[in-house]
Amino acid sequence: MSQCIFCRIAVKEVDAVIVYEDEHIMAFLDIGPIRPGHTQIIAKSHVATFEELPPALAARILHLGQQLARRMKQVYAVDRVAFLFTGGDVAHVHAHVVPMHEKTDITSARYLVGSDRPVWGSEHLMVHRQILENVRTELGFVTSPDV
Image (cartoon, rainbow, N blue to C red; front, side, top):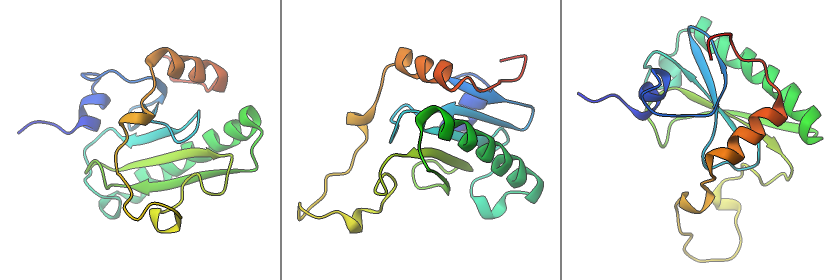
């Protein structure tokens, strides 16, 4: 059985722009960011859904999200940073940390006005690695010594 994409990132089989890593969790910049700085935090061990996540590991993810949020507020001069657990795209526990420039930055499609039929996809959001590396430098978040 093949590993999911986040398991492959956790063992560095798949490249990512890592902003933090310890023995239990990893944070990396989203390749299709909602806003610059959009970071995903994953458990390094495979846990399919957040309700299965051991509370101590959930606390680690939340604590890192809070640290990233404080830094994002400084760097991007925003009042709010979104933190959300999701699992729609990849069945591996992950949280998104997104600096919010507009209140609609993480809105549901049900609030969108206009097209009768929204087109779903994220290819148009993909950014090049160098842009992500520049964001990592801009955030200046401290990574573990072995990253």
